[in-house]
Image (cartoon, rainbow, N blue to C red):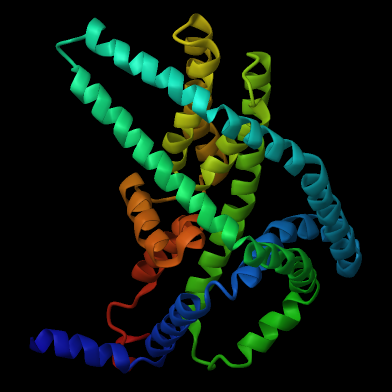
Length: 354
């Protein structure tokens, strides 16, 4: 007990440790209490990190920063406009078609499931097959009720989308244009003795920037490659399914496993247990293997230095705390924890510091 008290006294005797602890507590409280309200701000920061890489490369050629900010921002707005008016309507139409085909998919699945007791009576009985069908119906009913509830609050969702559409581009522009002013404003409230926090932030800032930019390119590459493969194999709803596969890389390990279900179900509904189905599933698995074993190590070799177990734990912990943002930032947050542990002084007392 005395050793714990001594350790605690040493910690609070170092102003750098006290400042770092208070800063982390304040940030956690702000995100926990006002995370939903600040979601456009967080999204703007993420996009600003993404665009800052392009701005930095243009300024390296000698162009004025303000000109680079305007060029990159206009290109970003053109990209968003193209996605909104070119891609989203197609994705929505394909999603609507899938929803319309759900009854047919369920009926065909019931027929196939009820045939299993005759083919494999030692593995599944008629009663078990009926129980599975009943559970599926219950889940679909609950899902339908959830969709109905969400449609009731559709007006609020539209307002939220409008807030994102209007505020987020403005925030992105000023985050990139006035980055130095914003950082200087925050630094003005930081005490002079903040070497420990500055060292940790310097490492984490680079990690977050590389992670966000790497994730963007990973999503784009996986999406394009999957779209080409699905289109070549003539899979229905190739654009929507490939988009889901690309987005799934946001959640390591878990995302790929979840998206496998709709891909396999649509392929089975289209071809049944055929060679086309096997080819499609094999192609999808090859893409996942190449992504996990080639693309991720190539793009995140300097970012992700964490054990897979640590990544999964980070996804569960931060996802439960902050939802989708916690899942997205699970790896950077785990990196932050690791950086704090590594940089934390063994003897933080003034006498123990050099």
